[in-house]
Structure formats: C-alpha cells, structure tokens
Length: 198
Image (cartoon, rainbow, N blue to C red; front, side, top):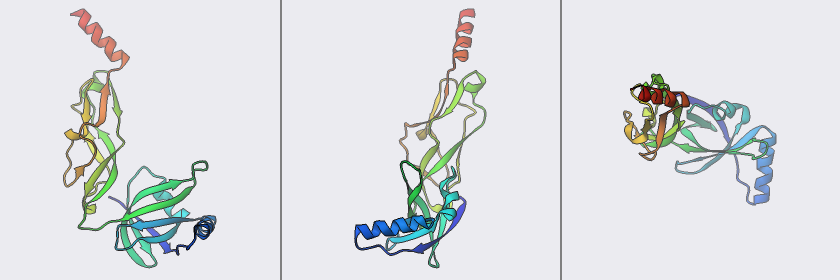
C-alpha cells in the first residue's frame, strides 16, 4: 500500500467548550484542519494544513499515513472524516495509529478484472461493493483487491464468502454480493428467441 507523508503540529485543548470552539475556528481560518490520533499510549490532538491533507482526503485511493507531529513519526490510517453539511468543508480528521505487529482494519477499493462469461452472453456486469473491509498487518495491506470475473455467468453473482486473498481476512458479511452479471432486456430477448426456436 502507498504511504502518504503528512506533517502536523500539536495543539492545546481549551478548558471550556466556548474557548475550544474559538480555537478550532481560528485554526480553520488559517487553513488548518484539527485532527486527533488515537490508538497509541495517549490521544494526540494536532492540526494539519488543508493543502497538505487535501490529496489524502479527495481521492478514491487508500493510503497508509506517515505522520510527523512535532518531529515524532507515527504510522496511521484515516479512521473518520467530518465535513460541514452545507459547504462540504473538511472540519476534522480522526487518525488511528498502527503498529507493525498488530493487525489493522481498513476499507480497500475493489477492482474487477477479466471478461465475464455472462457479459459475453449479453449481460451487464455491476459492481455492488466498491470497497471491502479487510484485516491484516499493515505490511500486507494491498492498494486494491483485484477480483477476476472471467467465470461469472449470466444471472450469477459473486459473494464475499467466495473470495480469498493471501495474508488478509475479509470482514464483510459472507453473503454480501460484491458483483453480479444482470440479465439485460436484450439478453432476455435472445434467450427467449433461442428457446422458441428449439
């Protein structure tokens, strides 16, 4: 998995909620995004520049994040993003610290490869789950999960329980449908015509 390098500065947490709101507002006015790092010995409150974090947030790709906060390096993943509901402005980011010897859970994009038998027969291939939740050591995390659909027939689907990948565990429900080849009107018509011609 690719690594994204990000610099952060630790920030003080104000005693009162009013002071806290003011300090967060001041941060955002200076193009800084408040962030929190969980999962280590202590919770770290810090901020990152909006320009620095933008390529990490606005991408379909998944990254490991090499965070440097006041000179200290930590490995992390993005756990949660909060946006302003009306303006869609990025308000807050939660990171989870990760360690080489502890498995981590993260969603990884799904990519379909091959030419499904059902598509050759006139069906339409649909991807139902764009990401799957995986559990693995971060050294084993893939950038994407490639699923071969060559043998997927017309009207058939592929479920999570049918998939296996080396060195990682899929955490979604086993019966969740990842992709399917749907019968199109044209394929139905061709099947009906073939049946009538017999």
